[in-house]
Amino acid sequence: RAFLTKSHSLMTMRDMLGQGGGEMAVFECRGDMCVTHPDTVLDMYCVTCAEAVCSKCALVAHQKDPHQCQMICDSADAYVSGQLQESMQHASAYHMRLEQAVGVFRANFLSAEAQEAAHLKELKDAREKVLEMVEDQFAKLKSQ
Image 1 (cartoon, rainbow, N blue to C red):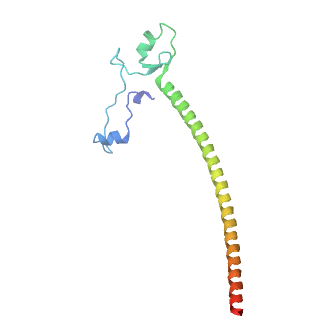
Image 2: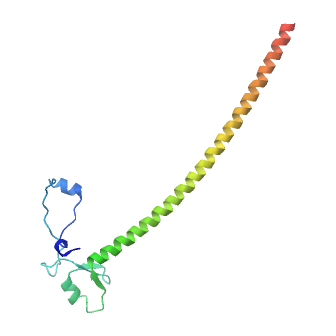
Image 3: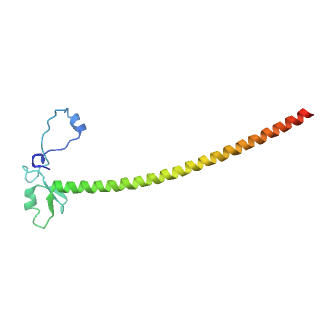
C-alpha cells in the first residue's frame, strides 16, 4: 500500500450502509495496531511465525532467530495471487467436467431422438397394418 493509505481499513458497501454511511461517508482511517507498540501499525509479516508484526517488532523480536519478515502488502499480494491461481485451477477443472457432462447429455439426447424416431416409425407401420386389416375385413363383410 502507499504511505498515505497504509493505515486505512477496507469495508464492504453493506457494512458502510449498515453504519448509516451514504455516498459522502467519511471513514476512520486505522489499521491493526501492534499490541507491544500501540502507536505502530502492523505493516510487516513474519513468514516464520505466520503472523503480522510491526516494523519495530520485526527488527527486535523477530531477528533473534533468522526469521523471514517481509512487507505485509507483499505477503498479501503473494497470498491473493496463490489463491487466485488455485481458484482458476478449480474453475478450469470444473469447466472441463461441465463440458464432459454436456457432451454426455448431447449424446444421450441424440440417442433419445433416434429412438423416438424409430418408435414413431414402428407405430406408423403398425397403424398402417391395422388400417389394412380393417379395410380387408370391411371389404370381406361388404362382399358377403
